[in-house]
Amino acid sequence: MTGFRLYKKERLCSKIAIDALFLPGEGKRTVIAYPWRAVWKVNERREVSCAQFLISVPKKRLRHAVDRVAMRRRCREAYRLNRSLMGECPKVDVAFVYIGAGLADYSATSRAVCKILTKIGASLKKAGS
Image (cartoon, rainbow, N blue to C red; front, side, top):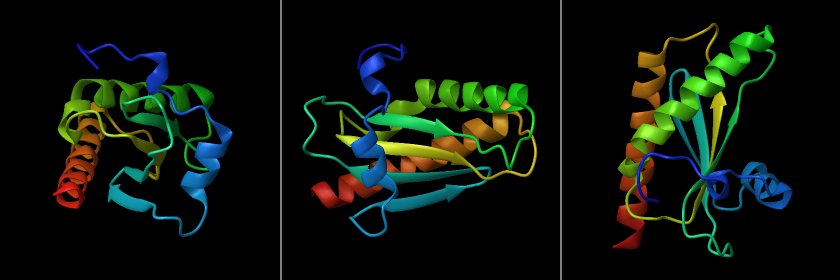
C-alpha cells in the first residue's frame, strides 16, 4: 500500500479467515510484546496482496467501552505508521489481542506493535529465503 492511509481491504473481515487464524495448529504463529499479543498466519488463498489485520480488546481486560475504543485506536494508529516493518506486501493475516491489565499509553502500544511487526517481517523473510 502506498502512503499512510488504512484501506478497507487491509481489514480482516472474513469469518472463515478469522476462524482459521484462531484454530489450534494450522501453521499459525504467536508473538507477544506486552501489552499486545499477535496471532498471525500466511494466507496464500486470498486475492488481496496486502496484510490484513484485526484488533481485539477483551471486555475482561478493559471494562469501559471508551477505554476499549481508545486502545483499538492506539493500536490501529501504531499499525498504520509502522506496517512497513513487515516488508513488501505479504499475504498475512494478523490479529492483535490486548493482554494488558489496564489502559496503556500510546508509546507502549507503539513500541509493542513495532516489535511485533519486526518479528513477523523477520520470520517472513527467513521463511522466504
